[in-house]
Image 1 (cartoon, rainbow, N blue to C red):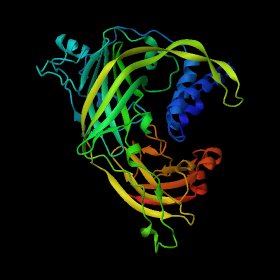
Image 2 (cartoon, rainbow, N blue to C red; image 1 turned 60 degrees about the horizontal axis):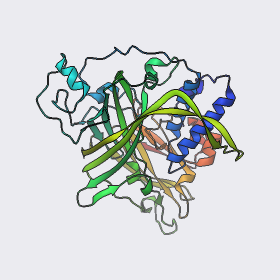
Image 3 (cartoon, one colour; image 1 turned 60 degrees about the vertical axis):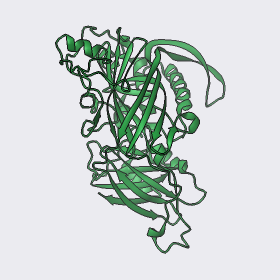
Image 4 (tube, one colour; image 1 turned 45 degrees about the vertical axis):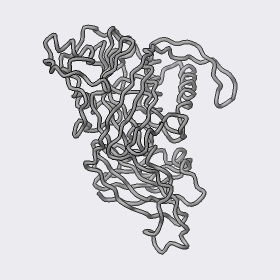
Length: 426
């Protein structure tokens, strides 16, 4: 379920080291997963990046490189077509901090005084600008659909970031359009009338742990975080006994999860911002195939620990959101309840018979041209509409093991081998 371009990545001669590195990466990723189908796409991206780290040659970039353009308030427009979860997020976005706000904008404010955008004299809102341990983090913009919250951030360092972080500029053969910084976070919602709703691993949710974007210069990173909301919206549907249902329309969508309201506060607490260096240290790990303990190389990380706590007032962007009720199943009770398309992504709610588990199935969606759609973010079953014709889509439910072993993401094989399929028009 990854992009085809990664299939062409050359594999280094030291296959043994690459395999060990892959095992190490798998162990690290496993700790982050709360469901075995999540993060398939990002895992492939991380693995591809790791292979390139092993095979690539690092060059030192010119630290004097810097863009004298306003950053704050326009990060979406600068980055939105380069990250893996693409979309026109600048359209209808909430803008919290403008370029030129007098305080809290870190190096951006300094650039303004040196001839960039004129300061507005407006004090930056501390809910959206936080400085700690030499790093200033600004939540510049947000765009929220019913399925995801997209946040535009600017991270400014008093000193240069390591050149190792800036792989798009400094690494020969790097294939991605963006760089990645890792995060340690906690997050929760404050919903009117409901109070705080905790997220985090203890409650079965993943919190943001990476941000994709680009380094404007050696001290400034601009990027986008995608906060998955489908965890809070989606649950497996249960079809009523078909013997008591007169037609497909009588099939009941149950196990509903209450959707977040159109306005809520999202709290994002960042305690660590870090990236990979071109250094390795040995670590002990258990081989998942043999169960033996082996020594594998572990990437050394450069950490910036601190306290950056944000209270983000969110308004959902309902523009272009459409939901089509399907409520059809096959004779075994496997099918689709509904399909929702927002401005940036599309997903389907599955219908399953009593006793079936959602993780035993995979939903695949083909666009109007019959091409399999790419995942949008962590959940492999939320798909990006970017650059695709989605006036008509073809939605399929596949057996998980068959999908991984036989169908392998091939559009034609999916259409022929799916347990259930339906055509949906928007």
